[in-house]
Amino acid sequence: MSPTAVAILLLLALVVDYMSIGPNSLRDRLAFLMAVPAIKEGFDGSPADAKTVAALGGVIESLLDSTGGAYIAGASVNAVLGVSIGLLWIYTIGCMLPVKMGKKLGRFATLTWPQSPLYRLNAKMWIVAILLGMMSDLPGGLIGDITRSLVDIVTGLVAPLPALLFGAA
Image (cartoon, rainbow, N blue to C red; front, side, top):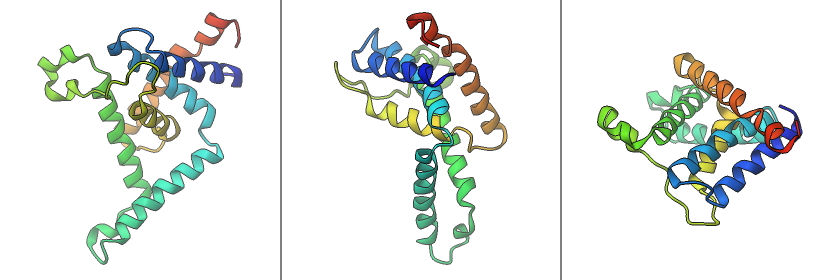
């Protein structure tokens, strides 16, 4: 995506969430699906991304150091950070699933982001979108492969929107 398309897509996601366009059940999902690829394309590898990873790594390192000489203190900060982002992706999938799937998947499918009133952004959803947009490349293994694939698929789906809606690519 071009820088213009990234900016348009991010603004479109903000407007959809802020103005509560559409039913609540779809609004957050639509805003999230536009925000994550825009944030990934726009900020991944940037100084903001590096500072965010360093800050979260510092928090995890201080938590591991606070255990003293415990065995868990030897855990890799990068691995713990990657696992945390992977778990955040799993939580997000639960929030994105339709509530009707709750009969088959149990409580996992009933996870939701809190509803925000009209003319207010859903802060929890945006925090998750920013973290996943900037750090979805950190998890490893099967979860990491799935997260990178999902972001690539969603990016391919929403990339044509700016050109289609506004004629700007």
